[in-house]
Length: 332
Ligand code: ACO
Figure 1 (tube, rainbow, N blue to C red):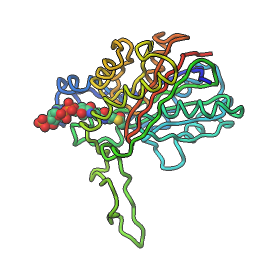
Figure 2 (figure 1 turned 90 degrees about the vertical axis):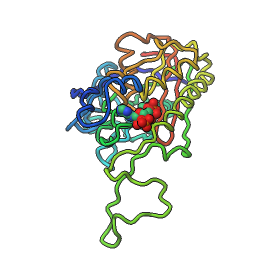
Figure 3 (figure 1 turned 45 degrees about the vertical axis):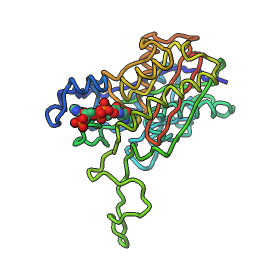
Figure 4 (figure 1 turned 180 degrees about the horizontal axis):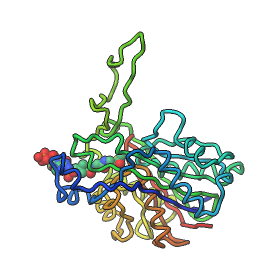
């Protein structure tokens, strides 16, 4: 069983942050950022909450699919930057859409989230009580970035992408993994408030990761880079084997946009020219799980993927998580 991608949508907040904007308060340069990451601009949501970004993208996906929110059976939202610890971001999007017949839940797998969510949707679609799933990835990494760390803050951004998914036929293969041994290389720790009976600043002795004093994410860029350059092609290869497609026969790869150099290294290993790797990184930076869904939407709308094409969605991120899904693209 495979999945039909009945409609896609995306939303990028209006506020453009250029590399020059970072030069005003950090020891960095446009030349360094473009050369080491491929990024020129990114978008920040400012006051708009994460669920709102998700709502915008979802409405476009529903419109493209030609369906009413009431037709949705399930909403999977992928985010690491939910505005609320509870309710879930999926419930917030559900409420905004008025998708009263759906049940909604979040899938938290960092930048691999939308790939995890895609595969999760396919598994639910195997049963007759779920016929139409909205997968929405929405993120506001600007809200957890460390603006005193030039290694990391220049990378991250905000945005959302969505797709309406239904049961379909055609080939499908997934490769979904997590490796907690590398978790210390990328994390964001919630502060503890303490209680009237115990102080907030007490530290549990077995706590593996120390919270950043600024309340921001912590990243070891070199280690994440090493992990990503190996994990990305590995996941694509495994998903392709399971789908019965040779990696060099893929028509389009829709990858998480972490660093252009990671994508170039992976393309080389997979025997694919860069034209077959969707790139939005120059314009949007790294908006975590949203980036794969934004790639999907742009490729569908620009006619870069057509019915019958072999496509591969691939992501990797905190956890460490990584995964890929290879399938025959069909929209009906
Ligand atoms: N501007 C100028 N100089 C910088 C900057 C900057 N913004 N950032 C780092 N440098 C300096 C470093 O301090 C270092 O200087 P030094 O040699 O004097 O110590 C020098 O540049 C080289 O630093 P490296 O860390 O070796 O640079 P590298 O080429 O590895 O690039 C980067 C760093 C971009 C962070 C890279 O390691 C990377 O992309 N890693 C993956 C990060 C990532 O993808 N994270 C998220 C993925 S998962 C998710 O999306 C949640």
